[in-house]
Length: 78
Image (tube, rainbow, N blue to C red):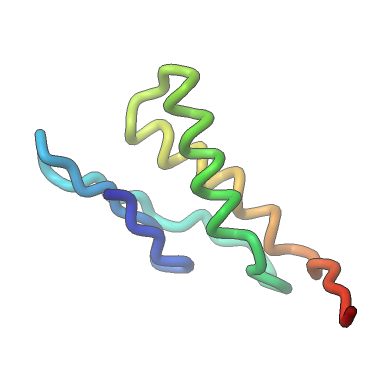
C-alpha cells in the first residue's frame, strides 16, 4: 500500500518487509497542489514498469511531483 503524505513524504507498506519511507522533496514555493498526488502515483508506476526498485520508484515519484506544485493549475469556471 502506497501512502502519500504531502509535505511529510510517502510510505510504502509491504507484506514482505518493513515499510519504506521517503522524505518529501520539497519545492521552494508551493503554489498549487492540484494533481500532485496523481502525478506522484503515475511516476511511481512508471518507475516500477521500468524495473526500478520500490525505494528508487519512491524517490523518482518525489522528484517528479515537486516541480508540479510550482505554478497554478488552470481551472475553468464553466
